Length: 398
View 1 (cartoon, helix red, strand yellow):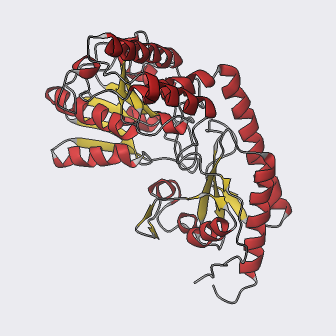
View 2 (cartoon, one colour):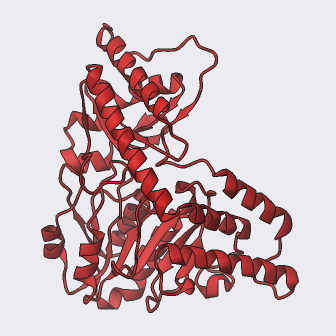
């Protein structure tokens, strides 16, 4: 077993490189929410003045968000508690509503658990799910997709961008194929929203889910885009909020904060981030190479990728050991997989890409950049990884 080095330093400056997990709230978002929590406290479903004030704020926010994905109508945006609720609603309610037309669903082997687990639950109810394989870049084949599509396919749910390796899926091409098919097209855009320019009309997307905390907004607020004409009952039963599409009193301050975060993501701001984050990727690769670290990229630096996500196989160093040593140095990164009860489970994404026997599965880390990330922090990451690799390579404890 490899050693875990314990630093003697008592004061460690935090370098946060796990923005794919969550992002810190932008100061403008925090200010917006603080103001609205203090001053707009009415229930948006009530008819008196305070309620109308809250309702107006909510509808203005809905318009901002609808415009961000080129939705045809503001009412196509349903506020949710986040990406998981959006995914579960889109998948489960579509399947149960449309099962008379067929019980076949198409997805991929590398979806987020918020997609995979409702799909597994539907399989237990008699639905058939085709999980498309991916190549070593983390992408599906359109030929495989076309071959899997059947007359009784009622739903296609394929993520826009992968949360572990950053690979992008051919969403536009899939939408073109499905535009004359009965299947509804859902995409989990939690990682992509805020990074990519999304046009639900041009891409023929019927359902899209995302979450505010990935774009420097608050946690526990997201939205589900549901194209006009796509109808199913609310997953959450209760009151008639969100035009009877999602029960529960709306979190108006969080909705306002979400809209503020979206307003900050201008086309120019998104392009600046993409360029800067790609530069960080190149900086990591050049730095580790110059320091003699034996590594490889899981996925690709070129082509269709989310620029804020970089997954690295550091050969011979376990994910747990590298992540722990970096944490002790004040650098927050993610493992290439989810941590459960203190143990790292094999990444289903890396397993799908490289096979279950690949050493990459247990020796990879994910770093992801955010608005606050600086070039000096990337230098510190490279320096620390290089030092950890050098120290462990000379250790007798493996």
